[in-house]
Amino acid sequence: MMDAVRPRFEVRRATRASRIASLVLIALAVVVASMPFWAGRDALRDFIEIASYFVFAMMWNLLAGYGGMVSIGQQAYFGLGGYLMLALANFAGLSPFVCVPIAAVLTAIIAVPVSRIAFRLSGGYFAVGTWVIAEVFRLGIANISALGGGSGTSLTGLGDIARSTRESITLWLALAIVVLATALVYRFLRSKAGLALTAIRDDAVAASSQGVHVAGTRLVVYLCAAAGAGLAGALYFVGNLRISPDAAFSVNWTAFAIFIVMIGGLGTLEGPIVGTLLFYVLNKFLSDYGTLYLIGLGLLAIVVTLFFPQGLWGYVSRRFGLQFFPVGRRLVMLEPGAPNDASAQVPLQPALQPISQPTSPPTSQSPSQSSPLPRTR
Image 1 (cartoon, rainbow, N blue to C red):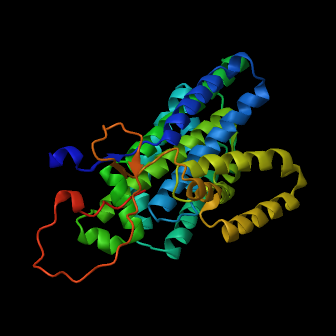
Image 2 (cartoon, rainbow, N blue to C red):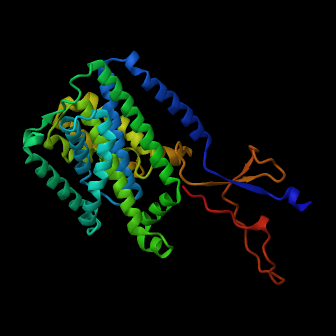
Image 3 (tube, rainbow, N blue to C red):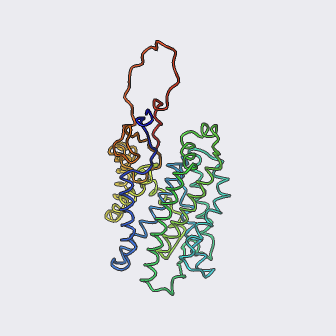
């Protein structure tokens, strides 16, 4: 009889907002996939550019926002992915579209020995060291005459494909990369490895004491971020058709990624989406103002950092409780005797009650009186 009225609870991840967001994102993906049939060439190019910025910013967010490894040299892998794609297409005769994922894999392989150098540094030294590594890549590529040297070269592997066909395939490839990259990062963060990553970010020593393989987890995340950056670079230069060392390895790529993530929300999956859209709008309509445009970006970053330290999405999420990509688990208390899908829920925060001095020896606590599990993000 007591079991029938005992309060029950459920551990859930999905929220109502996440379910609605899933439907909206599927609808948007369908609309984007149909763009070659009704949109102009400028719109197709704009989406490819947005996709490249978003994937690159999301990978930087994975590395710094979730892993705590702040890098200002991720442009090394962005440019490397672009050059690997171009070399495979121009010299090996492969389709540039096939070369995009191959370039991402090769970028991750090259990142393995590079990580042994980068991981010898920590904190600010790690950030500056990654920048130095990117400059080494830039100078090295600039001295390879077969790749055009310092002036760069053009992608010739798409010369036999009609322009409309090329632009349509590039857009579909960009859409597939955005969906796949988002799904993989989301799946990773919901796994035990993602939980271990956030634990390392908060306190590596404490995480190690609990059995987390700190070095191995950091290496996996570093290689994933490198592969994602190479994927974004290869995609960008497939759409751009021309590459040069100064353009591919420019520190502006990482600066823009930092701006996107800090404006949108560090350590969230929704943050890069919001930041990328805002950055694209500003870049689209204000980039002609030159120096004033860059000053405006800097001032906006300062204002957001001062008044919204969690970013725009971080503020919205805390203010309204919205989570489109919930990573953590929620404890939902159900009413006594209510079915599992009952809409009535008991708040997670129990009311504080005064503690009185017991008059009899304490007894074992029943399961129904146990303290609720902590809410995790």
